[in-house]
Image (cartoon, rainbow, N blue to C red; front, side, top):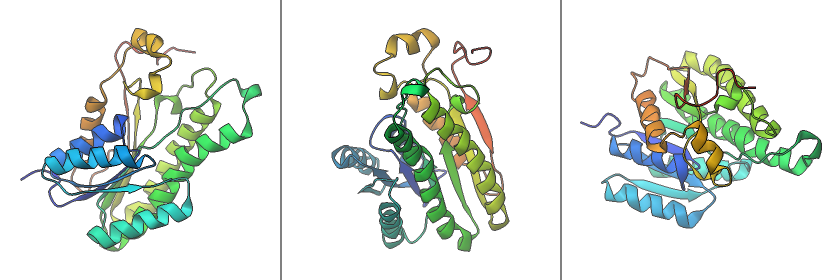
Length: 243
């Protein structure tokens, strides 16, 4: 039997990149998927890939920065499946620039998706998981939550805050048997690097399918065990000692 057989898994930002890889990896382990992102066409493509693997997939176009939209998303989860076993908060933006030149609009846009969206989805997931006294939330952070890059104030702030939110929610949720954790990836080969690919390749890039397997490993732990946090990065990446 597949390790996630019968489990309902919601992945945000699952229309492409790392989110798509995570969704497909979970489906290959027997999970049924709820796919949430803003791009409806691409969501349907990923949904079709999962269906061809023999698993159920429900594609729900969602702006996770909207409280009303997240409410509708979880209403659909409840009506389609009745429960949720796993939430992967993967959706994120990496817009940045020199701090003294950043518009407040850019700041708020990044924080609203990377942090507010993760909070809204986690809150709704916890409300469904708590009565069943089981469930798991995995937040996709970044090594920027440890060491920032130049011109990354909104992104870095959001990932530091996501790390703190993970710890606070893990504490709130543990008495209900719900595990909350965070995975901090280093450079990963997704569209986020399209405009800086030469630099990323010089540092080292990981295949998103590898990261997806890390998420699967965390998701498949016994329900009484939590992998609270982890950092995964290319050996060649200048993370330690950079500055």
